Length: 127
Image 1 (cartoon, rainbow, N blue to C red):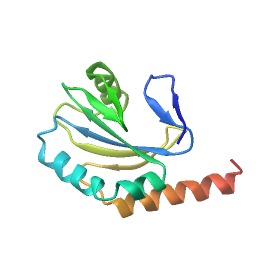
Image 2 (tube, one colour):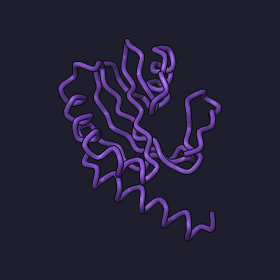
Image 3 (cartoon, rainbow, N blue to C red):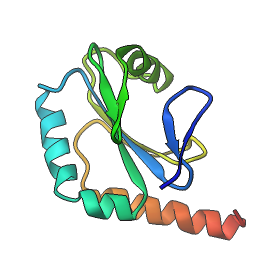
Image 4 (cartoon, rainbow, N blue to C red):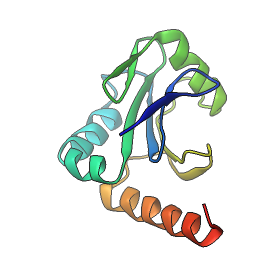
């Protein structure tokens, strides 16, 4: 999977999507539940070119295997209007369009459905 750096400095996949998991901290129960759900399906997420981004309030996060410094986490939280203490999951495509936004855990099937729908829309648009 090709990685490039976008204008805001985070790693971006050339063809895939990001699944941002915004959480106040790693100790947040919803975060732990969401990550348990995702870790069970990591190979399928990889097959769908979905990169998981873990974004916290006051600690370093990750985008895929790349570390995301605390200041970049704060920048992403501001960019996506994530309030302090808020848990949110967002699926964002390569054009920065939000394809899924939830304030609770999401299933991998929901993510896959949105990825496949986005791919069909790209093909129909001639990308």
